[in-house]
Length: 108
Length: 118
Image 1 (cartoon, rainbow over the protein chains, first blue to last red):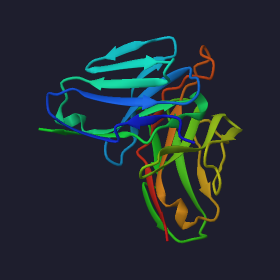
Image 2: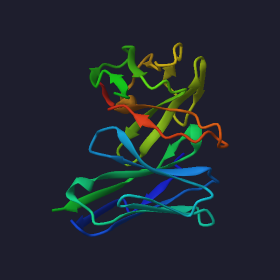
Image 3: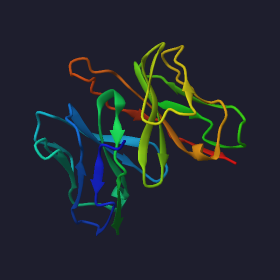
Image 4: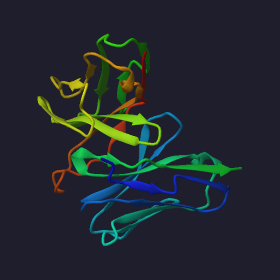
């Protein structure tokens, strides 16, 4: 069963704009992770936020976590064409569960 | 270079012909896992292993087998492949974080193995 569900499924923006992706999950978590996947390639870990954290930053990435709403958001600021990829949230620890992903397309 | 290596990267086979997809990591990770990725469904976990000789089912284990005889290797075996196992497969590994309940793990992924079963 899919626990993490991303929204929107696809997002198209201009270079320089911000991109926001949302993830909802169903059960309690210890942490939530975001991964990036370039077309057909392996996933790359972006950021991990623990259940007792509300916000975390890494470079142009900002992740928030609202455990009361069972949701998280990933914000990419000042997007670049190279940010074009699919983004997945993941929960679950050993039984890591990924959502279906948000496809981001950044137009140069 | 720290990496997870999968082989083969591409394979076309026929129904019923046993095949093995190998996975090897050089980071001394305890945890290894297999996923399949299908359009619109994201990644679904097939099997995972927390250490040598310790394996457990993920969400979609039917039709697959795994073994963990050595820490670095975690092969995925399809005893009798069927067309519904046509997919993109990923192996991943990580350390186990014993300071967190549930074993927080940041996964390192292989490049993927695209399997077609005719």
